[in-house]
Structure formats: structure tokens, C-alpha cells
Amino acid sequence: MKNNLEIFTNYYQKKKKIINKKINNFNNKLLEENNSLIKENLNYFTELNTNGKNIRGLLVLLGYELLKNDSDYAIDLALAYEVFQTAILVHDDIIDQDDIRRGKYTITYQNKRKYSSLENSNRNHLSNSIALCIGDYGLYLANKIISDSYQEDNNLGKILSCFNQIVLDTIKGEILEVTLPYENQTDEDLENNIYNIYLLKTAIYTISGPLSLGLLLAGAEKGKIEEIRIFGEKIGIAFQIQDDILGIFSNEVEKNLATDIKENKKTLLYQEVMKTKYKEEFLNYCGKKDFNEKDIENIKEILIKSKAKENCEKKMNELYEEGEKILENISWISIDNKRLLLGFIEMLKQRKK
Image (cartoon, rainbow, N blue to C red; front, side, top):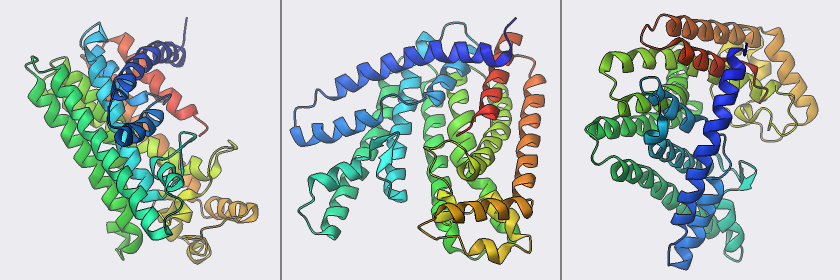
């Protein structure tokens, strides 16, 4: 008998192929643009919109299948969510000043290369402006996919309202994340805002949002959406705490270690260190742009001896367990679908990057 992880992995591989096919067809259609300058940048967008993990799109399909058997009707909604994700990441690349996304050059970097003859300030402004426009374009493309695909559906209003709230919540989380490093807050306020970022920018955006959209398309009433929201928040926050830890302790060679510390981002790891005598030692590394191997090892040592890593892992595991218990008590989800969701949680727990 297959375990929950195997069941989810098989489901994921099957649905991922379907989503990828839909995305590729959409990308080809997008490149029918006649204007060469616009088409060039849409091509950059489609490159970023290709070969993703498609987890969020998959959760849209799974949310739909929690109530209905066949997810074919939900594929356009999954596509819209994947397009939204690519669009919001284009904006994220501008904020983080990244040149690489998913192993490919970002839209900003592509245009920096194209307009390399310009002065740096003009080139950077132009490149960021183009990327901003393309990111905006992607957000409205996602909205249009939903409107066009489900205009005859009685639940369209609820779906659009939910989708737009997810977008707004994600942006609110981004505002908090970029603002906090420059704000002086009490320990309590800072910790609350860190959890707000985890909720808005990860839990809603990655877990509860796509599941809720799928459920709404399937005609779920408010009570079911609320139960999934609570479940998704627990799992999503645990996922983000885990991501913070992996961002420093991952053994995967391609992982850009300690990026959060370089950018002086406020995370639960940061907050846990601030409660200890190792605070000043840790602050020496926050905002430092160039880390050598010794710096990374010192940061790891601080996080271990201060018990920041241990405390965060404890909180992460508690949240995963709470999410699993919530799922266990949701009576309207079938045993098979519970096993799929438990397999999804198991996949998150076992990831190495």
C-alpha cells in the first residue's frame, strides 16, 4: 500500500503535466503579439512562466477536487494563478535587485544588457520600469483569464473577489517585509509583524489562497472555506519558518545561503537571536553584502548556540502538527483527499531547499 507521500507525488506529477501543457499553450498565444518591442518583453515573461514547480496551480486543482471529482473545469483557474505568481515574482525581482530567477535572467537584467550603452542610472531606471510594466501586465492577464473563462459561472464574483484579496494580501506582506528593516519596533510589535508577513506573503499566497479558489469554483459554502483557511495558515506559516531555516542551513549547492541576513530581513530566526546574549554578535552580519564561507559558518554557529534554530524548528513542527489535526477533524473531506493533503505536508517537511 502506498504511503501518503507516494500518493501525493503521483498526483502531483500527473497534474503538473496538465498544468505545464496549459501554460505552454498560453505562452505561445501570448507571443502572437505584433509589436516587436512588446513581444520581446512578453517573451521574457513567458520564459519565466515556464518550467516552474506549479505547486500553487496544483493546489487550485486539488481545492476543486475536494468537492468535485474532475478538475478539468478548474485548469484555467490554475493557469491564472500560475500567471499571477510569475507576475508578482517579476515585481519581487525589482525589489530584491535579483538578476536570476528560476535559473534564468530576470526581465530587469535582460533589459540592462540590451541598453548597456546608457548611463547606469538611466539604464537601471528604464530596466526596472519595463519590468514593472510587464509585472502589472501579468497581474491583469491573470484577472482576465478568470473573467473570460468563467463569465457564465454563478460563482465568478466570489472567485474574483477571493483572487483579488489574495493579490492585495500578498502585496501587503511585501510592504511589511521591505519596511521592517528600517523601523524601530518593540519586540512584541516586531514579532507580530513577522508573523503577519508569513501569513500574508506565504500562508495565504501559497496554501490557503489557491485551495480556497478551487473550492469556490466547486461551489463551496463559507464554512468550508473558513476551515481550509485555518488549515492553510498553520501549514503556510510552518512552511515559511522552514524556508528561513533552509535559507541558511541548506546543503544544496545552488541555494544562495543567508540572503535574508544580507538583506537584513526580519525573520523569526532573527527575532529569536535578538532575545539572547548573542544579539550583538549576530547584528554584525545583518546587512553585510558579501559573505565568505567563514561568515556563513559563524552565522550557523550563532543560530545554533543561541537556540534560535532549535526554537524555530520547534514552532515549525508545532504548526505542522496543528495543521494536520485541523485536517483530521474536517468531516467533509474524504479519506483519499486527506491522504493527498497529508502527502503534500510530508513533501514540504522533507524538502531540502
